[in-house]
Length: 516
Image (cartoon, rainbow, N blue to C red; front, side, top):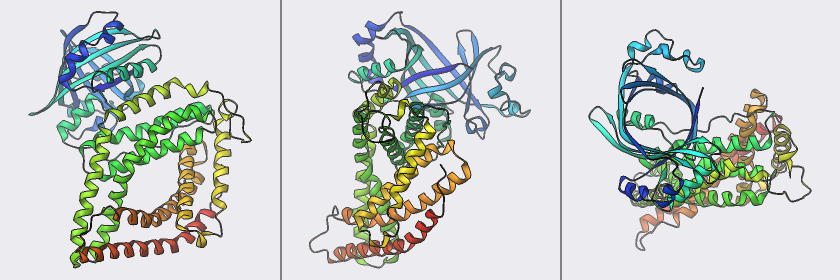
């Protein structure tokens, strides 16, 4: 089945003229622009059967003929879309299942009642200006500028986007070209397809927060291949929540983006041991910046919706609680606005484009690795991913075991350090889980997750202390001062309860033998 590889960028319509006059694009042209009208009808059942199975079915009018396209699978990483697609001409503007011969789709479209249930769901109608580019390294790409709209019943939304479809060569120059365009016009990475935008328009439904999927590793993979697969999974996790975070109010979208970001940073830390730390440094710095933008918003979400909400319910008659809650809610909204502004910023787009280029260039393979007395250093070129993961997981497991018998004596900062070690081990175990026995792996990860959750709840006490220092309490607001004291005491008592649970969670963790 053909695989389409394209980089998609969203462009404000007011900047189209500036883009078309850009000298860089003119210098890369090897064909004259061709403009044509594109009219497409997307089909599905009233309950969106195809969408729920990850497939899009459309009929597109191309001059005097109709072409049926089925798209499915694939992913979008840093705006780079990899999708399987199958096209076939049809005699009339109606779906024709006899044209679907690819085994990957046959089962899905074999149901006798499906053709009867299909309905036009939405339409895309736009002008497409197309020309071929020859990129500096000799690669060829098709440059498409689409301008029009998506229509679903009486509703419509404007469409203005660039598609850079790779025809030959490496994807890296696509990212490099996008970075140069970013200096001219305010493009944004488009991680959702026209079909996904159409479904959102016709249903008004935001997809649920997307959680980290299992990483698809194989034991025979090289360490470099495993690294690319893991980072790709983390990016997919993050970008799948991006659009909904910008539009929605559900705090779980930000939470999942932050988890994805932490997983990426953890993966860079893991694999920098196998390759050159210098090669990983630029990306590590950008992800650290992004974590700094998301962290405060997530901390305020947890504090306001969990700790503060529970305490306010218990002390609902206290005069200072409502005033404190209102001030904290405003700070929470301000930090969430800052996180959304970060996603909408040029720096975020630039960081993601650089990450996409870096990931596809695999430059870490070419940089020399410093000699060090470490059994993981240089493993990228001489060790299987299974052996690499075994050594890494064993090392981190031993780091955790060093705390055995000391839990009751650990200070707040030491418990926080333990939480970080547990979190890193959990992420590593999840990354490599696919190459080990599932039953033992799942049991180990669940015990780590419980341990991490308890340590996280205990850490919320110190975070609450810090957050409350941001709240402006009136000098004569004795009720508010008292409310702050109640919240601090409430939070501290919760930490003590969790500390009692810690020993039990540690025993459960100890009872699970390492799965590697």
